[in-house]
Length: 213
Image 1 (tube, helix red, strand yellow):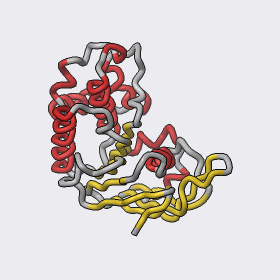
Image 2 (cartoon, rainbow, N blue to C red):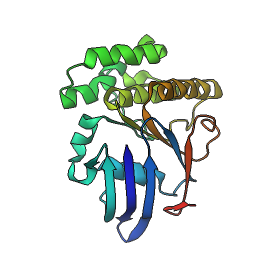
Image 3 (cartoon, helix red, strand yellow):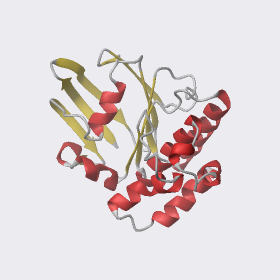
Image 4 (cartoon, rainbow, N blue to C red):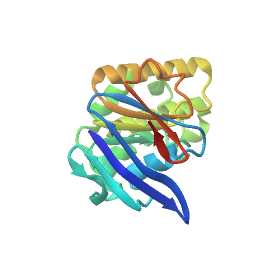
C-alpha cells in the first residue's frame, strides 16, 4: 500500500530524514514511534507533499506519489490527521469533516459521512458546533473524522493521542481497533506505543531521522 524507500529530507541545511525506508502493507496498522524531534511529523508531511523531498521514493497503491500534486493526494484515498488538528475555527464540526469531500468533488460524501458518524457517534452529537467551541479532545475527534472522509485506503495520523484524557484516549483506541477490522491501512506516529501497542502489526522506531533496526 505505502512503500517508502531511502527518503531524505532537509529543512534548510538540517538533514531531518536520513534515508528512511518503511512499508505499510494493505490492511495493516503500523506505528512510527520516536521522541519529539525524531522526524515523525516531517515523514508524514513528506508523504502528504507538504515538505520537499531531497531524494528517495514514495509509492502508494502502485503510484509514484512524488509525481502526484500535494492537493491531489487526498483524492486517491489518503487521509491525514495533523498533530495540531488543523480545523477551520469558523466552520462547524461537520463542515470541517466535509472539507476533503468538497475539495475533491467526492460523489459519495453523504454516504461516507453517515459511515463516519456510525463509527464515531459522539462526533455527530456536536456536528453543528463551531470548531472554535470544541474542547481539545473534541477537536481531535473531529480531525480524526475528517481524515476518514478521504482516507478510504490509508490513514496517516500524527500524534492522535497527544493531550487526550485517559477516557478519550481509550475511546480513540477503540475507534482505531474498529478501523483495523474494516481493513484500512494506518500509520500512527506517536512518542510511545502505550495507547496502541495491542493494535500494531509493525513498529518502526525512528531516532534522529533514521529508522532503527
